[in-house]
Image (tube, rainbow over the protein chains, first blue to last red):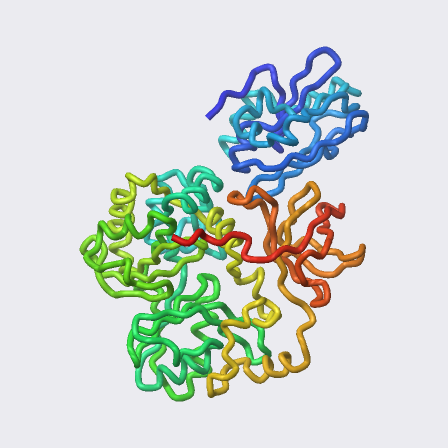
Length: 128
Length: 369
């Protein structure tokens, strides 16, 4: 089990975003990696690409399954976590920390208001 | 037995839930896909031992003076080659040569054959065999009388040997013995679906949990692990063992599936599908099962399109990461002219062509002892 940081916002598709200034760091939740199992492959967009709210951020694959990643926020990709290309298994160990996926320069910071709080997300996955 | 969701359950269902397994609907059965991690479970089987509940598999008993003739007619392999206590892999085919199922035929006695068949095909197989049973052999749907536990891996025999007085080492690959395990009557077959040494143990359903527990006590010193369907699939793919619905279907013949070795055209009698197979043998096979490795970045998975020189040419039947080889591997159907090894192909991964190359199979062969 893991804790879900209070300063993150969450989607029902199991992504999280942490906002620092005008930048959002995006990842997948502990629950998501746990459902997927051994993660073996991560496909991320290119720096400079523009992504829409709910737009594709690439995919994460485990031994068993492929999971598409959707962006919780719109904006421009300013950084990707390249390390995951060679060490995708980090997503199983530290999905809320070291294994973030991308950083996005927020186009519409208000978008995060519609996302779930840590408490709401946990009750959502508890009921799922 | 069945679950609240209306799924069929094996006698070990409660055990899986107690172990915290992730359960999935597998062809109408509530089955464990993994307990801890597919990779860990996979590695346990390659390096030590793993235990699988395969009680969902079906059993059909064919008995009586007409048993041999019926088995010879429904099975593409040659049951005349079987001695008592021997098993063989075979095909149950339609008249048109496609697969009804792949089956394991065990010869218990001259007038008694024991068939192990796929879970999701068992009713279909039984109905099909019954329909062609014109000479009235006794055909019994026996799945309810058997639980099946597979113990696989280099330490599988050492584990099970602690629990039985039956000498396991002399049982050769694809032979079996009727004895006991932990005092419970059992059929112990040196068969499996992982590419490792090991046994598949058939016991009465009410005894399954006691046998399961005893196996874990016996295998503890080797680091034995419970293994789910996820690891079962990665293991069998590395060993290039066919999975019904993937490599073999109603529209695929054994020639196409690289399973000519289970078809004995010269066994001296017609069998279901033999006329169609003869015709295809003469006219030639247009597609063949090939192994591939991804050379580009991406994972080819079941159902993905395969292209040759940019043109659609076939499809992936099974594909994914190989934990043992640390590569992304798969099986696919290709036009015969492209099926030789060393051919560059492209697998369409989310609408993007990713490079791959055809390679010899099996991908993994266990080291000789």
